[in-house]
Length: 383
Image (cartoon, rainbow, N blue to C red; front, side, top):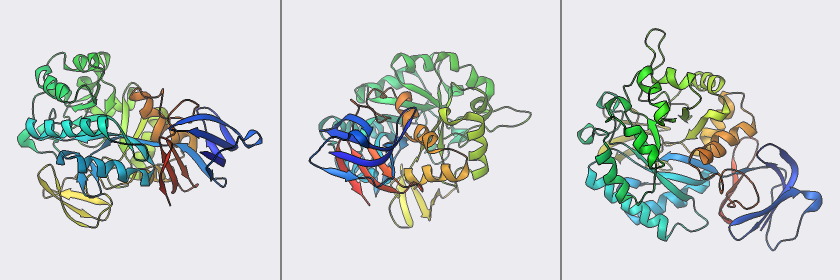
């Protein structure tokens, strides 16, 4: 396969009129159209932007399915739906539930990732365990009945069931057993503070032990305050902390998105959707971890009024980031793909358009509307 006549965004440079040559599931060369090779199948990008596929490190579900459904059909539904929004790989995200139900979900996710998940659909590159190790004080739309203290022993149960496929754990550092953060890093898991009532010092004190991520930054954590510094203050002042952001125009005001971009910079922001099963479906009532969620437009809330994840598509979040800030297309690539790939330690095969890497590619226009998505060398979506 050959993509021609594209504005191709590489790590440090842009090829204004270039090609990408693909064989099987890999990129084998990238260059200027002056030196274009021949291929059996040609996709003419017609001058549009050719980017590395989006990576969503925090997504619960889509198109009526949720990872907590714990079925092969549910996992497959999500993986097949995501290329429509330009997402080519993701972390299947769980939520606070009973140990039994979480383990069932982990088992089905791993089974699907190991045995199915073909080219042509988004690839599951790991699991994000969001809960049950969170604070009841910042519960959000999670179920308080199943909250657990973050302990090594409790982690070991999930780690074993996932066959080491867990890549991120969201937890409340102020609730955790001594040494928990370091224990996660020893297992090559990213410790992410979220649904946390920790204040500035409690967050910062865990950075030397490996804390390096903030789950849906600003949401479900102690805010920045001029006399009482919170988790958000720690995120603002410490580059070691990557900030996940749901830029759907609901979870964060546009001005807050812009302020965060100005403070953190494109290198330290990772765009996520945090989407649940209602994504792609009509308004109505849906289930999230045993709780009823009402979807109305782009907004989802449980009965208490708390936001219950999002129904945002990744391209929508990237487009909002472009509209709310001064971010360039190259900076949008970082926040939607390469930062996550580096963070999750898959940059050797994902996150940039480099020879030898997976052919995970999205072609978008200047308004970030998805025209074509290629997942591991196979066309997965065309507008």
